[in-house]
Amino acid sequence: MDKLEKYRNLIKKILTEYENLASQTPNPSGVDSILAFDEKREQYLWFQTGWHDDKKIRGITIYIRIKNEKIYIEEDWTEEGIATELLREGVPKEDIVLAFHDPETRKLTEFAIA
Image (cartoon, rainbow, N blue to C red; front, side, top):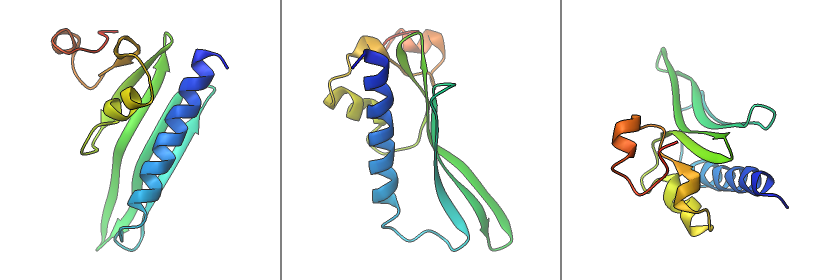
């Protein structure tokens, strides 16, 4: 299996596990937890949408892209951080970009800049 296919499968596995865990906790009625995997455009999302008490609920929990053979974490609102999970699964730091930080801040991390 090539590197990109490995990364695709790993991201889908982790997001599915996270969503399964989260679905065990009651969500407000009318709010759905959604996984969206777009392999053609290399985008992977876990988000919530719906209505609660006459208010529109929407929010991205995790948004990941694969770009230039690296994993770009664009959004991550998990407690531990998906980068930690990726490292546990053997993804090297130089293949993970914390894209929710600006490029200057990324230089101060142990991860890839771009």
